[in-house]
Length: 393
Image (cartoon, rainbow, N blue to C red; front, side, top):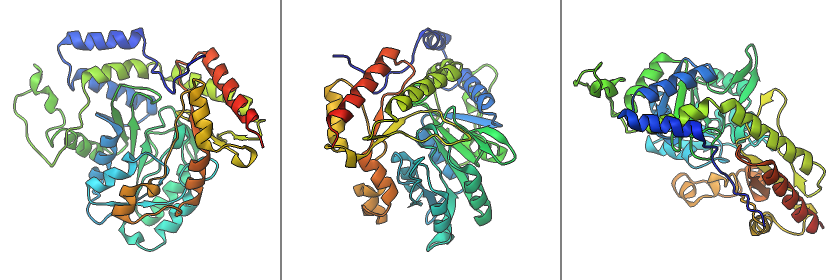
């Protein structure tokens, strides 16, 4: 029986050469390769500033810290995301205000954002944090218009969105990374490009970039890393409260090699998604994901829904059979309002966000990664279709 994992990183000779060069250079922590990674990523997305950090969780924390989020503040976001999106608000004494998602894109629903901005407790809202789910950019024109109207900031959770773009009013097709006040990317092992662990913050605001840079390394001078270089000084100053979120040159070396392949890696994901869509579109028990017009979908995830009314099994059993037949599968995402922590700390409860909870009850994520062979993709298609046909009502 063929085995297809949920993910396998696309690591090859280019990444190996970059890492070996970093190790042999004698500089393995934050240094020149990290600065180069920042420059090349900024150029790729078209951003004025890019700052490499240890992970996207740290990026989100730093972004909220930099815009002044603190105790008693609230940030609007979606419950249909990984916990990092909301948990960083608690680091600063703030709280998440969850709103439901769109039933087709699984992105945060601008209508629900507007309701929250006009509802009870709206005076505490200081920011909106949209999540570009699975690699499809949110409706940023509407979100930015709402933010301007209500005087709040926009921090984009772009963990899924390396390679994503969207047509904006007056700007045309625009890459995620230059749209909101701050964008936060992830380079975790499963992401569209990886540095094993790592993240990046982009912003057009020089003052925000400077504050983030200082806060990312204990509140020290932005270029304090140079104190160990012949061009720098041993002296450093502490300017503000800070954290330990710097990215090493070894991680950046992997990221540099991956970034130079980003178009190739994105095209491969898009090709696999197109094959899946074509194969599953006619199956009555399957519902393929929607890619909006005017969006360049990066396909970080391929999240399919089951039409359970057309099947004799539920989502959980469908996953069990897939795994029994050698196909790795996951679920994205478990709504945060159903989690004990968010219920206990913030008073959320199951049933509050019917769209997100319905999607969760029927969705599963299939393997989609550039290292997949055509034979791997064909096996996934064959297996999914066979299970759906064997279990039709």
